[in-house]
Amino acid sequence: YAFLAADSVYQFPCCGIVKQWQAYIKQNTGAMLFEVWRSTTGTAYKLAGSNEYVALTSDLLITLNVASGAEMTVYPGDYIGWYTENNEMVAYTAGTGPEADNIRNTDLRPSPTAFTPGMNLDWSSAAAYQNRNYGIRATIDANSPPFFTNLNFLMLAQPTWPVGNLVYTVSASDPYPSDTTITQLKIAMNTDSYFSFDTTTNEVRVAASLTPLSGNYLLRFKVVDLCEYTASGTLTLSIYNEPPTIHNLEATVEVLEHQMTELLLYTLSVTDPSDPFTCGISSTSPSPAPFSVRLKPGLTGCAFTYCSCIPFDSKR
Image (cartoon, rainbow, N blue to C red; front, side, top):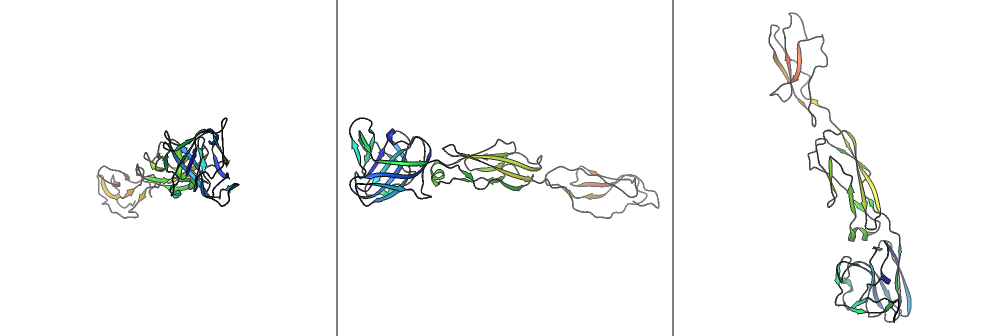
C-alpha cells in the first residue's frame, strides 16, 4: 500500500538532506519504505528517493537513522510518502480542525521493488482521505555544496588547435548521490572569445583561432545544484607559441665571382606551427656582404640570394 501525504503539513519547506525518519507503528508489522515525492504535473508525482525499514513490533515509535550514502536531497515543495507491506501500519488520528486533508492511498501490492528513484506515478485513482493526521515525520540537515572533480588544473594547449577542437570535459559531483542522479548539477563557464562551453555535454571547445594567445589562459566555471549551493573552479591553459624552425642549415653554396645579376643561391626550409614568419640575416663576416634572405613568391621557405658582384680574391 502506497501513501502520499500531499498536504502542507507533510510538505518540506526548504532544501536539505533527510537524516532521520520516525513513525509510530500502531498496527500490523512488516517492511515499509519512507519516501519523498515531487510534484510534476497535476496528480502525477516523481519519486525522489526512499529508505527501507522493517517493523517487527507494533504499537511502537520507530526511528530510522539514514546511513551515509543513502541520504536523499529534498527541495521546497516535496512531500512525505510511504509504502507499507500491510495496510495502515502508521498510526493516525481522524477528526476535524488542522489535520491533513489530502492523504492519498493506493494498493500497489505485491511489488515494493517497483519503487525506484525517478519513477513517475499518477495518483488520480488513489483513495483520498480527509482529516487524517499520520504519525510520521522526517528530520533534515543542511545540504552540502557540489564540487568539481577535475578543475583547478593546468593543461598544455596548442595555438594550432582548430576551431571546434575538444579541449576538456568538465566534471562535477555532490556529496549526496541523489543530487546528481535526479536533479542534475548545472555547470556554467564565464563568457569567452576563444573557447565555448556546452552545458549539455560539459565540453570545452575551441571557438576561435588561438594564435593571438600565449602564456597561461584561465577559464572559470561555476556549478550549482537545485538548492542553489554553488562551487567554483578554474581550468588553466598553458598556451605555448612554438618558435619557427629552419630545417636545412648548416649548408655550403658556391657562386662565381663574375656573377653580376641577382642569383638564388639557396632556399631555406622554414616552418612555424602557428604564426607567419619573416626572414633576415643576423650578421655576416666580413661585413657588409652582398647577400640577402627574404620571403619570395612561389617559395615555401626563404630565398637566400646573391645580389651584386664580389671582387676577386675575397670571401663571404
